[in-house]
Amino acid sequence: MPGHGLPIISNAPDCCGITCRNRMTGWMNLKISSLSKDTQTVRTNIMTGTGVQMLRAGLLGVFFALMTVLPVQANDRVAEAEQLVSSLITELEANAADNTATEEQNKQFLNRLVDTYFDVDGITRFSVGRYWRVATKDEREDYARLFRSVLLNQANAQFHQLKNLEFRPTSTKARGEKLVLVGGIIHDKSGEFPDVEIFWRVVTLPEKPAKIFDVEVENISMLKTQQDENTTLIRRSGGRFAALNEALQEQLANQQVN
Image (cartoon, rainbow, N blue to C red; front, side):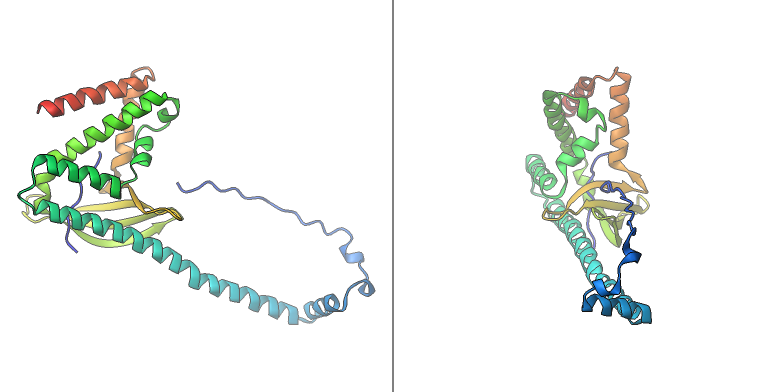
């Protein structure tokens, strides 16, 4: 299905393995007479091989049950992610085709689009890396506001370019338990630019709506690129988080002038 890509910015859960050691001391000293009739039957079945067959059948049953359940869960996540991107594309197409929309209306449209389809809080935190934890509450709030404003202004400035672009879906794949990559090609209908491969990184969590967390263009993460730029600026400013906010404030002022 054709569509347009939004000009947006440019983990898996931790798990631990616990090794359990079964202590078998004394088990071999149990006497048959001390076991119940049912227990004796189970032990006899194991010794004769019947128990092994039953166990194998039970394990196979569980295995095949998982094979029928897990793909459905994965498919549900994939379908949800694909539907999210498809809905985003549909809205972008409709708005881009509306030649009567004013610049202010486009800004309002993009503002709603970001809240509806993107993990704004997650993107905001990730975009400054470890410095988010050392920033003060006021610095975080200022950054979230400035970052969003600069982002929306950039998107609005490029909005007219969407009319010549279309999104062609290719493949979708689940990555771990949280992430789904919805792949496709951005095609320029004017022929001025070559096709570009894109992956929408969609976060799918239980009991929560799917949200776009990142966009990969030609295997380059736009969000990671943004994070690298932000953290480099903070680091070169002696670790001052406020330096990033000052730079964004200046960028926002320049956008408003232009």
